[in-house]
Length: 58
Image (cartoon, rainbow, N blue to C red; front, side, top):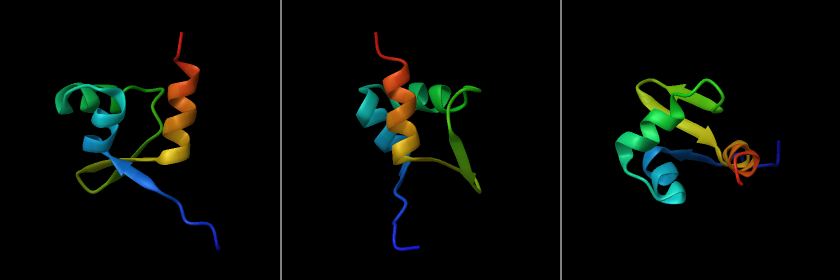
């Protein structure tokens, strides 16, 4: 298990997408988003987020 898994939070998703925190939360709650809940915190694995974002580019 030498590979470190990087997770990003709602604020980092908002920064990456260039949107507000409430909009990022709404996006993260979508059924097709690779969301991981840690208690009340919303997280996403960085590589899963990047793949999700690539699939949605026009």
